[in-house]
Image (cartoon, rainbow, N blue to C red; front, side, top):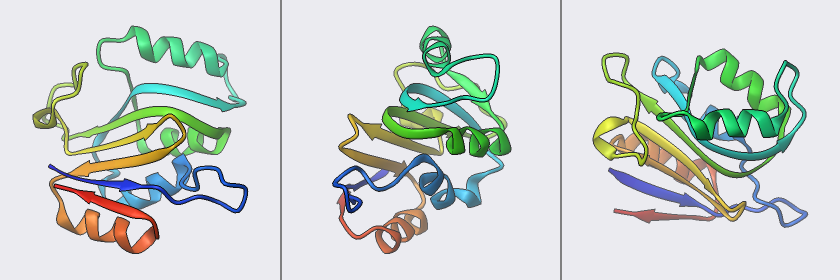
Length: 142
């Protein structure tokens, strides 16, 4: 898998790519099964769980929580800052990803590391090129 690290910052110095921006980057993969494998974030959820409960729910699952594309996008609108996150996209014929993630288990992985940078891992060179065009401060890791 290729990895591209994204270091873009907004005018306040915070990590610029939010979850919504990262989802738009991988929009052509919306038909995959998406799993939040790890999440630490700030936001107000509109539902029965608060953010801390959602984080605990994800952490207690052997593979995270599966989200359909629309629900994942709705969640992105409720998150104001992602601190740590691992989001994995798997083909429909694959088993859910296991923890820790193995590249053979997934098609796309999006990670946010300590609110410092994002990593997109994929086998698709077009997705890597798209990330390089969309974001200004990137580093390609082979």
